[in-house]
Image 1 (tube, rainbow, N blue to C red):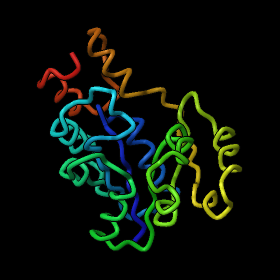
Image 2 (cartoon, one colour):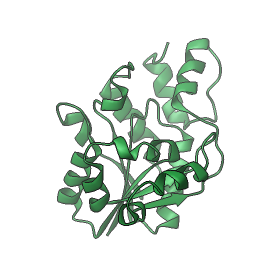
Image 3 (cartoon, rainbow, N blue to C red):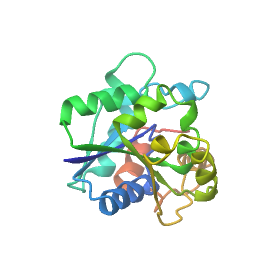
Length: 199
């Protein structure tokens, strides 16, 4: 089995995440994509993020209609900081896949050299770096030249439609009373309103 893993705070999850995951699934022939909402991401320790149970519920609502998608709460249940290395090790134990592909944005992939145990992580899985508005693949290509060739070859790229959607913009829109319709699934929008998130 070829397993895709998509991590993130998903605060909230939106169509940009879903389009990226589906594009990766199709282009790299993945059998399944598991969305893993972060518990306590170390790189966002200075940011206030929504309660884990809300982010988990939002993600489950968003992926419910896709039979190739599922959601895991393993990072939320794990105490302490959420490191991708630990998550990938757990995914190997749970799913025993032939290959794991970690799906992320180009902006995140640019920071890979600062990640916890990044060399071991790249030995365990391949990265799929998806284009995002404001970031292009040229920057990633330059960063990859700074890495040993065997590690750089473990980072793949994915062109996705230019959806200028971000979780931070959605949170700001909610605070300002502006519409968020068509930026995320209706079920996610309804949950945000019902639980009065981001106000």
